Amino acid sequence: MKLLTEPRGREDEIIDLFTATFTASEGMEEGALIGSLVLSLLRDTAETDRFVFTAEEDGRIIGGILFSRLTYEQDDRTVFILAPVAVATDQQGKGIGQRLLTHGLAELRGAGVDIAMTYGDPSFYAKVGFRPISEADAPAPLPLSRPEGWLGQSLTDRTMAPLKGPSRCFEALNDPLFW
Image (cartoon, rainbow, N blue to C red; front, top):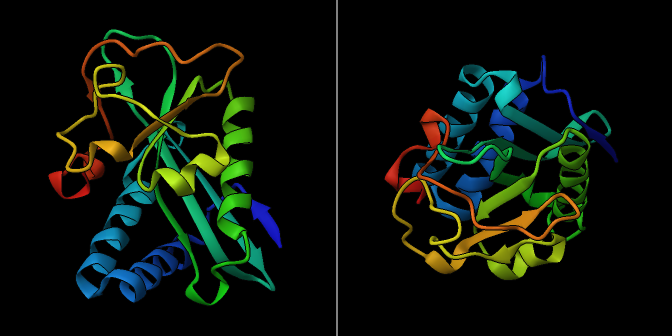
């Protein structure tokens, strides 16, 4: 398996992976919603405001994770949010997601990103260093339907101090359906 950091020329394959994976687990409507989110992230978000990591085996993309910039108005630290994550249905349970996350977080560290955030299953994301965080310490862009899923981690040698000010995410993620 190869871990890749350049999505150029494979955008449609990446979108198809996310659409198919979420359709299989959550239904057609969710698959279309996540596919649209990934399309917007890949096509409408500046490359400086996103990171895309994929796993490839035998020329086929079998997993993907996307990070996009999360801006805090009164804080100069660089923050990226992980969303979404997908591993092809026939490849799940093999540790591909964890390998992608470990690789992606290391790449973000190397790029000087201070903090990574995500919104999801605390037990899954704890395996790669994410910890629950309160909205008082890191305001979410929109109200959270499951506050226990708001997670963060410092990518520096410093403890994660509270983030200051309201936050803003990229346009397609700025939808209450995702929060």
